Image (cartoon, rainbow, N blue to C red; front, side):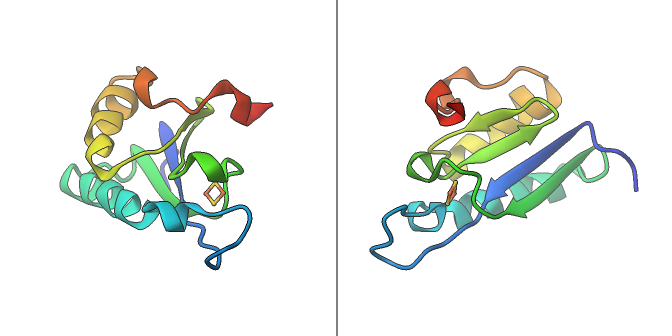
Length: 108
Ligand code: FES
């Protein structure tokens, strides 16, 4: 298995309705993960990049969340239409997408 340049983790956690933490599942994360899968498959990105459906990434009220390593960059409130920008600008171009960054407080 080749070591990927970047590894994308998409939170796909769901919780029952009414759960106090909410979840990315309630905020549309499935469509975000599917958009990443489509980009990876169409662009033949597997190998150079890795994609993983993850459990809770810890910032549930900022979902859907996406975390990119080794950069340690978390994106918040990601929509399917944002995925192409993250792929082109960050994964391929090396520049995180400032407008989608999670608030610094998520790491506090
Ligand atoms: S449920 Fe997605 S970050 Fe917690």
